[in-house]
Image (cartoon, rainbow, N blue to C red; front, top):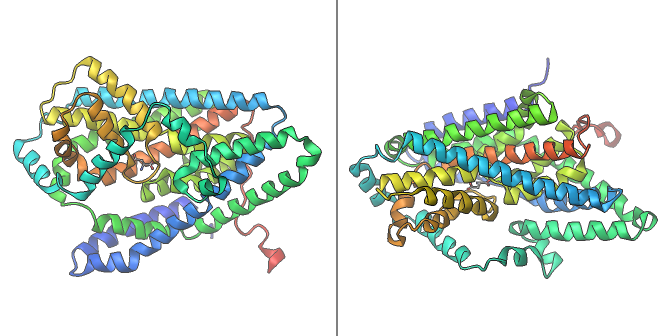
Amino acid sequence: MKKLELHWKILIGMLLGLVFGYGMTQLQGGETFVLNWIKPLGTIFIKLLKLIAIPLILASLIKGISDLKDISKFKNIGLRTILIYIGTTVIAITIGLVLVNILQPGNGISEETITKLTETYANNKGVTSKIAEATNQKNAGPLQFLEDMVPDNAMAAMSNNGLMLQVIFFAIFFGVSMLLIGEKKAEPLKNFFDSLNDVVLKMVDLIMLSAPIAVFALLANVVVSSSDPDLLLALLKYAGVVVVGLLLMIVFYCILVSVYTKKNPFWFLKQMSPAQLLAFSTSSSAATLPVTMERVEEHIGVDKEVSSFVLPVGATINMDGTSLYQGVAAVFIAQALSFDLTLADQLTIVLTALLASIGSAAVPGAGMVMLVIVLESIGFPADKLAIGLALIFAVDRPLDMCRTVVNVTGDATVSMMVAKSVGKLSKPNVKNWDDHLETVK
Ligand code: ASP
Protein backbone atom coordinates (compact mmCIF):
# COMPACT_ATOMS: atom_id res chain seq x y z
CA MET A 1 0.00 0.00 0.00
CA LYS A 2 1.22 3.48 -0.83
CA LYS A 3 2.21 5.34 2.31
CA LEU A 4 0.02 8.29 3.19
CA GLU A 5 1.87 11.53 2.50
CA LEU A 6 2.97 13.62 5.45
CA HIS A 7 0.64 16.53 4.81
CA TRP A 8 -2.37 14.19 4.80
CA LYS A 9 -1.31 12.67 8.09
CA ILE A 10 -0.92 16.14 9.59
CA LEU A 11 -4.27 17.23 8.20
CA ILE A 12 -6.00 14.18 9.68
CA GLY A 13 -4.30 14.91 13.02
CA MET A 14 -5.61 18.48 12.89
CA LEU A 15 -9.17 17.44 12.09
CA LEU A 16 -9.21 14.82 14.83
CA GLY A 17 -7.80 17.44 17.22
CA LEU A 18 -10.62 19.84 16.36
CA VAL A 19 -13.29 17.17 16.82
CA PHE A 20 -11.73 15.85 20.01
CA GLY A 21 -11.32 19.37 21.41
CA TYR A 22 -14.94 20.16 20.65
CA GLY A 23 -16.07 16.88 22.25
CA MET A 24 -14.09 17.74 25.36
CA THR A 25 -15.74 21.13 25.71
CA GLN A 26 -19.03 19.27 26.01
CA LEU A 27 -17.82 17.10 28.88
CA GLN A 28 -17.42 18.17 32.43
CA GLY A 29 -13.73 18.35 33.25
CA GLY A 30 -12.92 17.92 29.56
CA GLU A 31 -11.01 21.17 29.37
CA THR A 32 -8.82 20.29 32.34
CA PHE A 33 -8.19 16.87 30.84
CA VAL A 34 -6.95 18.44 27.60
CA LEU A 35 -4.80 20.96 29.46
CA ASN A 36 -3.23 18.32 31.71
CA TRP A 37 -2.90 15.36 29.39
CA ILE A 38 -3.05 16.49 25.77
CA LYS A 39 -1.55 19.97 25.59
CA PRO A 40 1.92 18.84 26.81
CA LEU A 41 2.32 16.69 23.67
CA GLY A 42 1.99 19.82 21.52
CA THR A 43 4.24 21.84 23.79
CA ILE A 44 6.99 19.20 23.65
CA PHE A 45 6.83 19.22 19.85
CA ILE A 46 7.17 23.00 19.67
CA LYS A 47 10.07 22.82 22.10
CA LEU A 48 11.82 20.23 19.94
CA LEU A 49 11.49 22.45 16.90
CA LYS A 50 12.76 25.48 18.77
CA LEU A 51 15.60 23.40 20.18
CA ILE A 52 17.15 22.91 16.76
CA ALA A 53 16.49 26.38 15.32
CA ILE A 54 19.75 28.00 16.46
CA PRO A 55 22.08 25.10 15.50
CA LEU A 56 20.32 24.90 12.14
CA ILE A 57 20.70 28.62 11.38
CA LEU A 58 24.33 28.59 12.47
CA ALA A 59 25.32 25.48 10.55
CA SER A 60 23.47 26.25 7.36
CA LEU A 61 24.35 29.94 7.18
CA ILE A 62 28.04 29.42 7.92
CA LYS A 63 28.15 26.54 5.44
CA GLY A 64 26.20 28.56 2.86
CA ILE A 65 28.46 31.59 3.05
CA SER A 66 31.69 29.65 3.15
CA ASP A 67 30.59 27.89 -0.05
CA LEU A 68 30.33 31.18 -1.92
CA LYS A 69 32.99 31.64 -4.51
CA ASP A 70 32.86 35.40 -4.20
CA ILE A 71 31.48 37.62 -1.47
CA SER A 72 29.76 40.05 -3.84
CA LYS A 73 27.25 37.30 -4.55
CA PHE A 74 26.15 37.47 -0.96
CA LYS A 75 25.65 41.21 -1.27
CA ASN A 76 23.36 40.49 -4.22
CA ILE A 77 21.37 37.92 -2.28
CA GLY A 78 21.07 40.25 0.72
CA LEU A 79 19.93 43.26 -1.26
CA ARG A 80 17.39 41.37 -3.34
CA THR A 81 15.99 39.64 -0.28
CA ILE A 82 15.37 42.87 1.59
CA LEU A 83 13.88 44.63 -1.45
CA ILE A 84 11.51 41.79 -2.31
CA TYR A 85 10.50 41.44 1.34
CA ILE A 86 9.60 45.12 1.51
CA GLY A 87 7.74 44.89 -1.82
CA THR A 88 5.58 41.90 -0.81
CA THR A 89 4.80 43.44 2.58
CA VAL A 90 3.63 46.73 1.03
CA ILE A 91 1.40 44.76 -1.35
CA ALA A 92 -0.01 42.77 1.57
CA ILE A 93 -0.89 45.89 3.56
CA THR A 94 -2.42 47.49 0.48
CA ILE A 95 -4.61 44.45 -0.17
CA GLY A 96 -5.77 44.57 3.46
CA LEU A 97 -6.55 48.28 3.36
CA VAL A 98 -8.42 48.10 0.06
CA LEU A 99 -10.57 45.22 1.32
CA VAL A 100 -11.37 46.77 4.68
CA ASN A 101 -12.30 50.09 3.06
CA ILE A 102 -14.57 48.47 0.50
CA LEU A 103 -16.23 45.91 2.78
CA GLN A 104 -16.33 48.12 5.91
CA PRO A 105 -16.70 45.32 8.48
CA GLY A 106 -16.58 47.79 11.38
CA ASN A 107 -19.62 49.78 10.35
CA GLY A 108 -22.16 47.07 10.91
CA ILE A 109 -21.13 46.21 14.44
CA SER A 110 -23.73 47.14 17.06
CA GLU A 111 -23.22 49.21 20.22
CA GLU A 112 -24.35 46.21 22.20
CA THR A 113 -21.61 43.99 20.74
CA ILE A 114 -19.00 46.68 21.37
CA THR A 115 -20.09 46.95 25.01
CA LYS A 116 -20.07 43.19 25.44
CA LEU A 117 -16.62 42.81 23.89
CA THR A 118 -15.27 45.71 25.94
CA GLU A 119 -16.66 44.29 29.16
CA THR A 120 -15.26 40.86 28.43
CA TYR A 121 -11.79 41.78 27.21
CA ALA A 122 -10.74 45.38 27.96
CA ASN A 123 -9.26 44.36 31.31
CA ASN A 124 -8.18 40.95 30.14
CA LYS A 125 -4.52 40.25 30.84
CA GLY A 126 -3.98 39.34 27.16
CA VAL A 127 -5.01 42.84 26.12
CA THR A 128 -3.31 44.88 28.85
CA SER A 129 -0.03 42.97 28.53
CA LYS A 130 0.05 43.68 24.79
CA ILE A 131 -0.35 47.41 25.39
CA ALA A 132 2.40 47.37 28.02
CA GLU A 133 4.73 45.45 25.71
CA ALA A 134 4.06 47.91 22.89
CA THR A 135 4.97 50.84 25.15
CA ASN A 136 8.34 49.21 25.85
CA GLN A 137 9.03 48.72 22.15
CA LYS A 138 7.91 52.24 21.29
CA ASN A 139 10.35 53.90 23.67
CA ALA A 140 13.27 52.57 21.63
CA GLY A 141 15.35 54.99 19.50
CA PRO A 142 15.42 54.87 15.68
CA LEU A 143 18.69 52.93 15.44
CA GLN A 144 17.83 50.61 18.29
CA PHE A 145 17.12 47.73 15.92
CA LEU A 146 20.65 47.97 14.46
CA GLU A 147 22.10 48.08 17.93
CA ASP A 148 20.02 45.06 18.90
CA MET A 149 21.28 43.10 15.93
CA VAL A 150 24.88 43.08 17.17
CA PRO A 151 25.47 40.71 20.08
CA ASP A 152 28.06 41.46 22.74
CA ASN A 153 28.27 37.83 23.63
CA ALA A 154 27.98 35.12 21.00
CA MET A 155 27.05 32.44 23.51
CA ALA A 156 24.36 34.60 25.08
CA ALA A 157 22.89 35.27 21.62
CA MET A 158 22.82 31.57 20.88
CA SER A 159 21.09 30.80 24.12
CA ASN A 160 17.99 32.84 23.32
CA ASN A 161 15.62 32.04 20.45
CA GLY A 162 14.37 35.63 20.53
CA LEU A 163 17.82 36.81 19.45
CA MET A 164 17.74 35.14 16.05
CA LEU A 165 18.98 38.25 14.22
CA GLN A 166 22.04 38.34 16.49
CA VAL A 167 22.79 34.73 15.63
CA ILE A 168 22.40 35.54 11.94
CA PHE A 169 24.79 38.46 12.35
CA PHE A 170 27.36 36.25 14.07
CA ALA A 171 27.01 33.48 11.46
CA ILE A 172 27.49 35.89 8.54
CA PHE A 173 30.50 37.48 10.23
CA PHE A 174 31.98 34.05 10.93
CA GLY A 175 31.25 32.72 7.41
CA VAL A 176 32.80 35.75 5.69
CA SER A 177 35.88 35.49 7.88
CA MET A 178 36.14 31.82 6.97
CA LEU A 179 36.20 32.76 3.31
CA LEU A 180 39.01 35.20 4.01
CA ILE A 181 41.37 32.68 5.61
CA GLY A 182 41.60 30.75 2.35
CA GLU A 183 40.07 27.49 1.24
CA LYS A 184 42.68 25.15 2.64
CA LYS A 185 42.59 26.48 6.16
CA ALA A 186 38.80 26.74 6.19
CA GLU A 187 38.33 23.15 5.00
CA PRO A 188 38.00 21.42 8.42
CA LEU A 189 35.49 23.97 9.70
CA LYS A 190 33.54 23.75 6.46
CA ASN A 191 33.29 19.99 6.75
CA PHE A 192 32.26 20.33 10.36
CA PHE A 193 29.40 22.73 9.64
CA ASP A 194 28.36 20.75 6.59
CA SER A 195 28.00 17.62 8.64
CA LEU A 196 26.32 19.51 11.51
CA ASN A 197 23.82 20.89 9.02
CA ASP A 198 22.95 17.40 7.77
CA VAL A 199 22.53 16.15 11.32
CA VAL A 200 20.16 18.96 12.25
CA LEU A 201 18.10 18.45 9.08
CA LYS A 202 17.85 14.77 10.04
CA MET A 203 16.58 15.87 13.44
CA VAL A 204 13.86 17.80 11.62
CA ASP A 205 12.85 14.59 9.79
CA LEU A 206 12.71 12.71 13.07
CA ILE A 207 10.71 15.40 14.87
CA MET A 208 8.28 15.51 11.96
CA LEU A 209 7.42 11.85 12.54
CA SER A 210 5.47 13.01 15.56
CA ALA A 211 3.85 15.97 13.79
CA PRO A 212 0.39 14.36 13.29
CA ILE A 213 0.08 13.65 17.03
CA ALA A 214 1.45 17.06 17.96
CA VAL A 215 -1.00 18.99 15.78
CA PHE A 216 -3.81 16.89 17.23
CA ALA A 217 -2.78 18.09 20.69
CA LEU A 218 -2.22 21.70 19.60
CA LEU A 219 -5.61 22.04 17.93
CA ALA A 220 -7.51 20.27 20.70
CA ASN A 221 -5.96 22.83 23.05
CA VAL A 222 -6.89 25.77 20.80
CA VAL A 223 -10.52 24.59 20.75
CA VAL A 224 -10.86 24.14 24.50
CA SER A 225 -9.23 27.50 25.21
CA SER A 226 -11.15 29.49 22.62
CA SER A 227 -13.62 32.24 23.37
CA ASP A 228 -17.37 32.21 23.61
CA PRO A 229 -18.75 31.19 20.16
CA ASP A 230 -21.27 34.09 20.22
CA LEU A 231 -18.45 36.61 20.37
CA LEU A 232 -16.66 34.80 17.57
CA LEU A 233 -19.79 35.09 15.42
CA ALA A 234 -20.11 38.82 16.04
CA LEU A 235 -16.68 39.28 14.55
CA LEU A 236 -17.28 37.02 11.58
CA LYS A 237 -17.29 39.81 9.01
CA TYR A 238 -14.04 41.28 10.28
CA ALA A 239 -12.42 37.83 10.41
CA GLY A 240 -13.77 37.13 6.92
CA VAL A 241 -12.07 40.25 5.52
CA VAL A 242 -8.72 39.22 7.05
CA VAL A 243 -9.06 35.67 5.73
CA VAL A 244 -10.01 36.82 2.20
CA GLY A 245 -6.99 39.15 2.22
CA LEU A 246 -4.72 36.31 3.35
CA LEU A 247 -6.09 34.02 0.62
CA LEU A 248 -5.40 36.72 -1.96
CA MET A 249 -1.83 36.85 -0.70
CA ILE A 250 -1.45 33.10 -1.26
CA VAL A 251 -2.78 33.61 -4.81
CA PHE A 252 -0.27 36.42 -5.25
CA TYR A 253 2.59 34.15 -4.13
CA CYS A 254 1.42 31.48 -6.57
CA ILE A 255 1.53 34.05 -9.38
CA LEU A 256 5.05 35.09 -8.36
CA VAL A 257 6.18 31.46 -8.26
CA SER A 258 4.67 30.69 -11.61
CA VAL A 259 5.73 33.83 -13.47
CA TYR A 260 9.12 34.38 -11.92
CA THR A 261 10.45 30.90 -11.21
CA LYS A 262 8.39 29.11 -13.90
CA LYS A 263 7.43 26.38 -11.42
CA ASN A 264 3.95 24.98 -11.00
CA PRO A 265 2.34 26.85 -8.06
CA PHE A 266 0.33 23.77 -7.01
CA TRP A 267 3.53 21.79 -6.81
CA PHE A 268 4.99 24.62 -4.70
CA LEU A 269 2.01 24.60 -2.32
CA LYS A 270 2.13 20.82 -2.04
CA GLN A 271 5.83 20.80 -1.18
CA MET A 272 5.31 23.54 1.40
CA SER A 273 2.12 22.11 2.90
CA PRO A 274 3.68 20.39 5.95
CA ALA A 275 5.33 23.70 6.93
CA GLN A 276 2.10 25.60 6.30
CA LEU A 277 0.06 23.17 8.39
CA LEU A 278 2.56 23.49 11.21
CA ALA A 279 2.51 27.26 10.96
CA PHE A 280 -1.26 27.04 11.32
CA SER A 281 -1.11 24.68 14.29
CA THR A 282 1.70 26.45 16.18
CA SER A 283 0.98 30.12 15.24
CA SER A 284 4.69 30.70 15.22
CA SER A 285 6.92 31.20 12.21
CA ALA A 286 9.96 30.84 14.47
CA ALA A 287 8.90 27.38 15.64
CA THR A 288 8.11 26.41 12.05
CA LEU A 289 11.45 27.69 10.71
CA PRO A 290 13.37 24.37 10.81
CA VAL A 291 10.60 22.68 8.84
CA THR A 292 10.37 25.59 6.39
CA MET A 293 14.11 25.33 5.81
CA GLU A 294 13.98 21.58 5.31
CA ARG A 295 11.07 21.81 2.84
CA VAL A 296 12.57 24.68 0.86
CA GLU A 297 16.03 23.10 0.59
CA GLU A 298 15.21 19.45 0.11
CA HIS A 299 11.77 19.50 -1.47
CA ILE A 300 11.88 22.67 -3.54
CA GLY A 301 15.55 22.75 -4.46
CA VAL A 302 16.62 26.16 -3.18
CA ASP A 303 20.35 26.14 -2.55
CA LYS A 304 21.54 26.47 1.05
CA GLU A 305 23.49 29.60 0.20
CA VAL A 306 20.16 31.32 -0.38
CA SER A 307 17.73 29.59 1.97
CA SER A 308 20.04 29.74 4.98
CA PHE A 309 19.98 33.52 4.80
CA VAL A 310 16.58 34.33 3.31
CA LEU A 311 14.46 32.10 5.56
CA PRO A 312 15.74 32.95 9.05
CA VAL A 313 15.82 36.63 8.15
CA GLY A 314 12.31 36.28 6.71
CA ALA A 315 11.00 34.55 9.82
CA THR A 316 12.08 37.54 11.87
CA ILE A 317 11.44 40.50 9.61
CA ASN A 318 9.06 39.49 6.84
CA MET A 319 5.49 39.03 7.98
CA ASP A 320 3.10 39.74 5.16
CA GLY A 321 0.15 38.06 6.86
CA THR A 322 0.75 40.00 10.07
CA SER A 323 0.96 43.36 8.34
CA LEU A 324 -2.13 42.67 6.24
CA TYR A 325 -3.98 41.85 9.45
CA GLN A 326 -2.69 45.00 11.15
CA GLY A 327 -4.00 47.15 8.30
CA VAL A 328 -7.43 45.52 8.43
CA ALA A 329 -7.60 45.51 12.23
CA ALA A 330 -6.58 49.16 12.60
CA VAL A 331 -9.22 50.36 10.13
CA PHE A 332 -11.84 47.97 11.55
CA ILE A 333 -11.31 49.34 15.06
CA ALA A 334 -11.49 52.91 13.74
CA GLN A 335 -14.72 52.14 11.87
CA ALA A 336 -16.34 50.43 14.86
CA LEU A 337 -15.45 53.23 17.27
CA SER A 338 -16.29 55.98 14.71
CA PHE A 339 -12.77 57.30 14.56
CA ASP A 340 -12.38 59.02 11.19
CA LEU A 341 -9.38 58.10 9.10
CA THR A 342 -7.99 60.34 6.37
CA LEU A 343 -6.04 59.14 3.36
CA ALA A 344 -2.87 60.36 5.09
CA ASP A 345 -3.77 58.16 8.09
CA GLN A 346 -4.11 55.17 5.82
CA LEU A 347 -0.72 55.87 4.27
CA THR A 348 0.71 56.12 7.77
CA ILE A 349 -0.75 52.69 8.41
CA VAL A 350 1.12 51.31 5.38
CA LEU A 351 4.39 52.67 6.68
CA THR A 352 3.99 51.70 10.33
CA ALA A 353 2.61 48.26 9.52
CA LEU A 354 5.66 47.72 7.31
CA LEU A 355 7.96 48.67 10.16
CA ALA A 356 5.83 46.67 12.58
CA SER A 357 6.22 43.59 10.42
CA ILE A 358 9.97 43.97 10.75
CA GLY A 359 9.71 44.51 14.49
CA SER A 360 7.17 41.78 15.33
CA ALA A 361 8.53 38.67 16.98
CA ALA A 362 7.74 35.43 15.20
CA VAL A 363 5.68 34.07 18.08
CA PRO A 364 1.95 33.70 18.74
CA GLY A 365 0.13 36.98 19.24
CA ALA A 366 3.08 39.24 18.40
CA GLY A 367 1.12 40.95 15.63
CA MET A 368 -1.29 42.39 18.16
CA VAL A 369 1.51 44.10 20.11
CA MET A 370 2.61 45.95 17.01
CA LEU A 371 -0.99 46.77 16.18
CA VAL A 372 -0.93 49.05 19.23
CA ILE A 373 1.93 50.98 17.65
CA VAL A 374 0.09 51.18 14.32
CA LEU A 375 -2.99 52.56 16.11
CA GLU A 376 -0.95 55.11 18.01
CA SER A 377 0.71 56.30 14.80
CA ILE A 378 -2.66 57.46 13.47
CA GLY A 379 -3.45 59.36 16.64
CA PHE A 380 -5.85 56.80 18.10
CA PRO A 381 -6.66 57.98 21.66
CA ALA A 382 -4.52 56.14 24.21
CA ASP A 383 -7.43 55.70 26.63
CA LYS A 384 -9.39 53.82 23.99
CA LEU A 385 -6.60 51.41 23.05
CA ALA A 386 -7.81 48.72 25.42
CA ILE A 387 -11.33 48.97 23.97
CA GLY A 388 -9.93 48.78 20.45
CA LEU A 389 -7.95 45.64 21.17
CA ALA A 390 -10.86 44.15 23.09
CA LEU A 391 -12.90 44.34 19.89
CA ILE A 392 -10.64 41.98 18.03
CA PHE A 393 -9.23 39.86 20.82
CA ALA A 394 -11.80 37.07 20.60
CA VAL A 395 -10.78 36.10 17.07
CA ASP A 396 -7.09 36.85 17.40
CA ARG A 397 -5.96 33.28 17.88
CA PRO A 398 -7.62 31.80 14.78
CA LEU A 399 -6.49 34.77 12.71
CA ASP A 400 -2.99 34.41 14.12
CA MET A 401 -2.98 30.81 12.89
CA CYS A 402 -3.98 31.93 9.39
CA ARG A 403 -1.59 34.88 9.16
CA THR A 404 1.33 32.71 10.27
CA VAL A 405 0.65 30.42 7.27
CA VAL A 406 0.96 33.45 5.00
CA ASN A 407 4.12 34.63 6.79
CA VAL A 408 5.77 31.26 6.21
CA THR A 409 4.56 30.92 2.60
CA GLY A 410 5.83 34.44 1.85
CA ASP A 411 9.31 33.58 3.13
CA ALA A 412 9.39 30.42 1.01
CA THR A 413 8.23 32.29 -2.10
CA VAL A 414 10.88 34.97 -1.71
CA SER A 415 13.59 32.38 -1.15
CA MET A 416 12.60 30.73 -4.44
CA MET A 417 12.64 34.06 -6.27
CA VAL A 418 16.01 35.09 -4.91
CA ALA A 419 17.42 31.62 -5.65
CA LYS A 420 16.16 31.80 -9.21
CA SER A 421 17.62 35.26 -9.70
CA VAL A 422 21.11 34.13 -8.71
CA GLY A 423 20.93 30.74 -10.46
CA LYS A 424 20.60 28.76 -7.25
CA LEU A 425 17.28 26.99 -7.81
CA SER A 426 17.98 23.41 -8.73
CA LYS A 427 16.35 19.98 -8.67
CA PRO A 428 15.03 18.94 -5.25
CA ASN A 429 16.93 16.22 -3.45
CA VAL A 430 14.60 14.69 -0.88
CA LYS A 431 16.17 12.90 2.07
CA ASN A 432 14.15 10.62 4.33
CA TRP A 433 14.74 9.99 7.99
CA ASP A 434 15.54 6.30 7.39
CA ASP A 435 17.87 6.62 4.37
CA HIS A 436 20.81 5.16 6.29
CA LEU A 437 18.88 3.13 8.82
CA GLU A 438 20.17 -0.19 7.42
CA THR A 439 23.76 0.77 8.18
CA VAL A 440 23.13 1.32 11.87
CA LYS A 441 20.72 -1.50 12.52
N1 ASP B 1 2.27 34.52 14.99
C1 ASP B 1 2.87 35.26 13.92
C2 ASP B 1 4.13 34.57 13.46
O1 ASP B 1 4.79 33.94 14.22
C3 ASP B 1 3.13 36.67 14.29
C4 ASP B 1 1.78 37.38 14.51
O2 ASP B 1 1.18 37.77 13.52
O3 ASP B 1 1.33 37.47 15.63
O4 ASP B 1 4.47 34.63 12.31
